[in-house]
Length: 572
Image 1 (cartoon, rainbow, N blue to C red):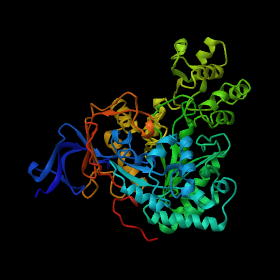
Image 2 (cartoon, rainbow, N blue to C red):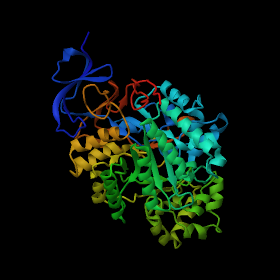
Image 3 (cartoon, rainbow, N blue to C red):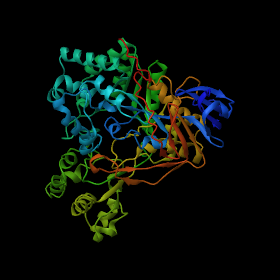
Image 4 (cartoon, rainbow, N blue to C red):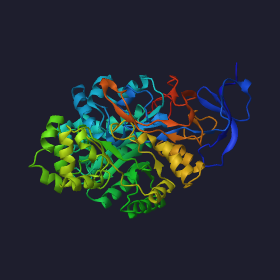
């Protein structure tokens, strides 16, 4: 009987701890790293030749929305194509449990707008063999998985389950209802939940860009501080769990004070979204970094997730789209089906309000590019900005956009560049010691965003092309730092005894491939994807899941209850 199931031989290890790289072999047994050192081929049943390659811990993405897609895509792509071996689900307070059976349809409709997951996909692809959060985790456990999943407990469904949707959006919970929420959170965490999450954006315009399918704020946008603090006290009593929050209301200073209060009351880490640079306001991220440093000096564990990619948005106006929701007139005009939108966007009476209340989107609106037209007579507009198209047509740029889109039944494609394109500012964010790369939104917005490339881009942009950091620092940021901050108990580093989540890649050959359309979703839906080259082997729990980008069908991923693959339930 061989001593090891698999040996990885001859590679250069970057172990995720920021220690210098070194040459060694890795022996894997029963899904774990059993030995690191000098090993012989005869000691294993399978040998992977890693000569000339880097051997690193699998990447960990703390911000995804694979809560629905995991039921039809066991690899949680495109994240897994880019070396991600573990993801966190249940972010932003969004999810599907607990959920009364009568509310399932409404729950799915919510996700069509705020995370742009097609309703038809969810209707066809989700088994709905659960009601409570523990039952949801059991359903996830039963599904084949190509990567690991760590679950937050999302607060929107929890609050709705207790209060009902209308009450949750119109009043404060009673003391009895708050007690029920705390009891359900305890129950969810007993079953393996790793903390709770909530989006709290300004409920009327402003920064509210992730609304419900009917244009109203999400339940957690309307959540009172007292409710959040009561749920934070549950974590303190348990001495367990983490809080993930997206916070951007009308009073930025009050937001930061509330985050500090959550950290004080819970005594637990806070994953703060998001630290990002803005080309026109370089003082913005620097202020947040100073605030974070002040928090750390006072012993408050608040860690930022950072937007380190400058990917823009490719979109048309026919889809469920929330990127205009910070403008009330645009939000209202974009509600409904294609015929509804055609009527509203083509209505001359609405145009003044649409011109006067321009959304922020990802860029200056007039700088949006007309990237693909559908009718030959519009070909001369392709590649122009809206400003240039307006000048060419002799009309306001908003009218140029909407007249073109309506003429093409909303199928015209546009591209909005990101606000954070300055490399010098991106490097400042990436180099903040505790900035966690990620925020891929994996599984969401798949028709206009491919954020799952972030891990590959991080290595290429910040190490290989610009020398902004070492590979040792990059792999600490991509693996060990997120593992520590979100409670992954035995992952994120190459260390004896840890789970064998391992990426073996060719540094010089690493490449992000062009964007393409994939018709691989349930109910005939499509998405935008980007693949990678250079990842030779990707292992999850010791099993080879990908060879040169091709899945093997091993499906060795696990549900990480309490941050570990062990199936032990916690007694509060």
